[in-house]
Amino acid sequence: MGAGVMIGAGIFALTGQVAELAGALFLLAFVVAAVISGFAAYTYIKMSNAYPSAGGIAMVLSKAYGRSTITDGCSLLMAFSMIISESLVARTFGTYTLQLFNVGANRLLVPALAVGLIVAAFLINIAGNRVIGGVSKVAAVLKIGGIAIFAIAALWASGLNSHEATTAPAAATTGVTASGFLAGVALAILAYKGLRHRTGRKPR
Image 1 (tube, one colour):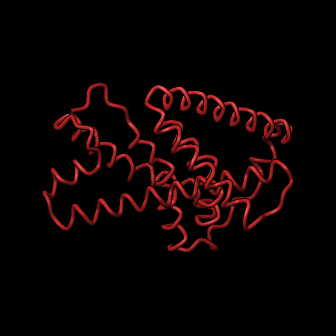
Image 2: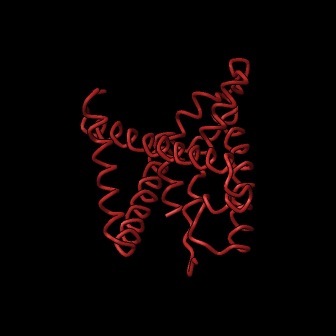
């Protein structure tokens, strides 16, 4: 599931937005986000080894700060971040779906499709772990296949001409602001949020 989340959010939903915010520093924004997410992943690893539990981030915060305002506040922020990220992915699904049928931006259809996707995900979640695992595998195969098709199509469209790419002038960074870069990094962190969707063999 973690790989599927990273593919869905990181590639299909966030790439364009991060590029718009970070400009020529697009790749650097993803690298910085990867480093930050790496520290978070390391924390998850150490905590799960010390305290094998199905409690997730709430358990980590509770062990670190006890029952305190910090724990409650950070837990709420985590919940809000999940709502925002899921809304982003859902609206992206709605926008891309309309583009498949040459339908322009529609103020009603995009949120309707987004809500429909969230409802479908809810129904899959309440169907049980076996259904969730099967749907996740099928979705991951479809997404990886889609990425492969897009990559092949892009190479074919470019004519595999690397000479133009190597001789093209470097993009200027003068238009990139610090706030835009930081916003791009913050958005890119969502691309690595799949690290939280790990599966424990025997959580306690």
